[in-house]
Amino acid sequence: VVLTGSLPYNTKCLEATVCCDLAVLSNFRRASLCIVQHKFFEGFIVFVILLSCAALVFEDIYLEHRPILQRVLNMADLVFTFVFVVEMLLKWIAFGFKKYFTNFWCWLDFLILDVSLFSLMVNMLGYPSRPLRALRTLRVPSRFKGMRMVLKALTVMLPSMFSVLLVILVIWLVFSIMGVNLFAGKFSHCYNETSEDMVMLDQVNNKSECLRLLDQNFFEVRWKNKKFNFDNVGMGFLSLLIMGTSSGWLDIMYAAVDSTQVEDQPLYESNLYMYLYFIGFIIIGCFFTLNIFIRVFIDTIHKHRNKIGKHVFMTEEQQKYLRKMKKQFSEKRNAVPRPKVSLDLVLQSFSRSSWWW
Image (cartoon, rainbow, N blue to C red; front, side, top):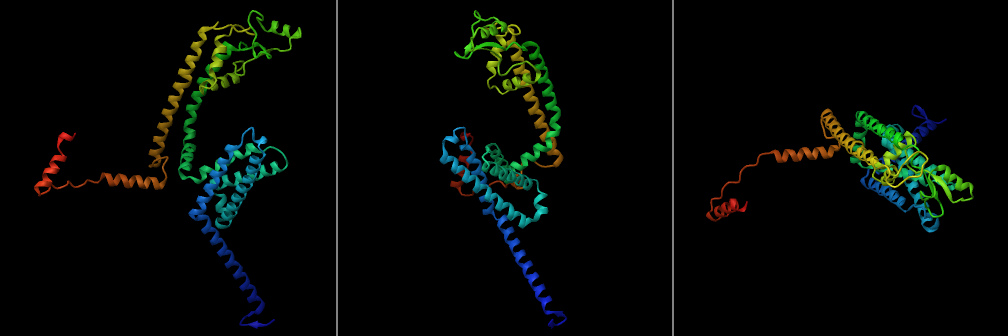
């Protein structure tokens, strides 16, 4: 061993190599941090996220009949996943695992990326994986600070809204139980699958007569129930939800008004008083409960705002701008002195005249 000073030569070479490796690693991590924090990189990632969400618009039931578009979407899915993997690796190097996995939005991006990789593997095996791609849209709130503030505020206010949701649920439960008592088993009818219409009342009166036609080799006849009914409390809740959204609720109301007895053929408007049930639900179960929910939601926002001392749905930059504008407009401005020149004085008096107002 050749001695150089107090240390062997090979020991100095080893220390120099380690220091060089650490310097290279430090420079690489510094470069990764500069890339990740650069505004163009962040803008590019946002653009890719929006582009991946826009690609979901082209997926429909006819996609299998358009192989070129399907191939383009599959290639785009690979490109998007590759970009997100590179982004994750750069953040791992720049921030480190501890800082990366202590951030909720980074965790969300990591889980969505895992789902994307899993969907790619499932797609390669020949299984459908299109429903999993809808999770890409969850990346959008992590990139926009305003959306993050809204989601955070809603998460904080959700426990205080639970009591109101419980009251609404109880009101709907009352209407669901009333619907079961009024309409259970009364939405069924004899249906002709060939003509796609209900069998007339003069041909069939009840379920037993409809099944008798089936025994007589009338195979196009079926005793059919409505898709949305009140046969139990669960189906009653579902029917009330359809009515609450004002989508397809007319069929439910018409079936209730035409209902007669259990397992009997419906008769046109044989039960007109059932209109009152639906009017009561629309007024109490929809309008009244919706107004309660909105009122309590607004009060909860004000309470949370007073508690934290700032606006709930505004970022720090927006609050600073708001304070600056309030300060600017609250300052008293000096009155404009009256001009000494006679012509300017006449023009000022004319412009301030009440004749203009």
